[in-house]
Length: 461
Image 1 (spheres, rainbow, N blue to C red):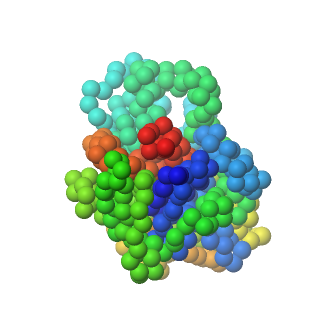
Image 2: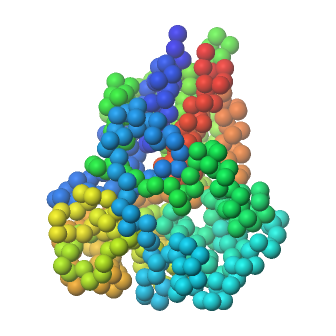
Image 3: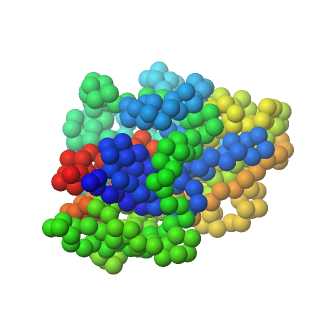
């Protein structure tokens, strides 16, 4: 008899776990509280604009992408980012400076002072830290304050919507941390690590190709849904999971509500692929300690403000991915993606689309502004930074009250508690973006690891 697996949550982690387990012959059921799958990976098409509610793109950092796209027959729908989007900007003194992509460009760049550039020469001679460091502490120690302020601070805001003073470098940016641990420094590690990545068929995120799909990122979750349609129960909110003994093995009862009606399902394996705060409620009856740890994971609020302008009123050439804003610039937005420059069909002909992010750990209070105020703030910033003469023709505000899990200092304790929980409850697995990385590629890799753990355990027979 095939082992039964219940997957709670149909975000990209849960969906890919479901897809691979189904291929291996498991009897699967996916329970999703919303009326559609994909989690934050949602695409809206409205008035000729294509708007991503969650990830705007992904980086091709693992060969797993090609494998699953071939399987799902969506590889021909994949579209790579315009080469122009390789150019990225950072704001300093109200001027957009391109991020240098080569040593000569770095030397010529006006983004950092001569003193700030020369400080990097010390990096190979700096020893290892003896304590857990924040991203800010790590970068300032190795590269200096100016690189922290005008490179890493905006980058962290763009990736995590977080603060480098709070994020743990070891857990938020493990590959950066590993360069020091393994090679003794960043410059040494970048040089020596290239060969090893090539052998693993992996690409560093700064060289991996960026992609989406012709009709947006929702193409991926929707393709999995279409393949496994009979294995889903949507509008199904899980209340708890309760273990019990059967035939000398542990099984689980999953209690949930579907369309308001109480339901129960028995299973051999449970995969929790929901946000930490949701998982905390589900496991609280059986493990209050782990529940408390999961509840403490901070998710800052982020608002996405999508604006469409006529090309004729934009005074700047949109020749890149967009720009990020350092905290020192005292702006009210985190950065803006030039969406219609990166991928085709993101705006009607004669118009340009901009996706701006507001709030995060840096400015959570701005999230509280109503839509009208948010639009005013964003429009004002874009007019000032890019040079736009009139108001937008199209606008939309999307809010995530709890956006991205923060891998803050001490996060190792959270991961240890999760591992202990899985040992105590054989057959329950946690696979979500608060474990193993927050990017789409990280989630795919985590799903692959979770499936392999199940296949290599006594649960697969």
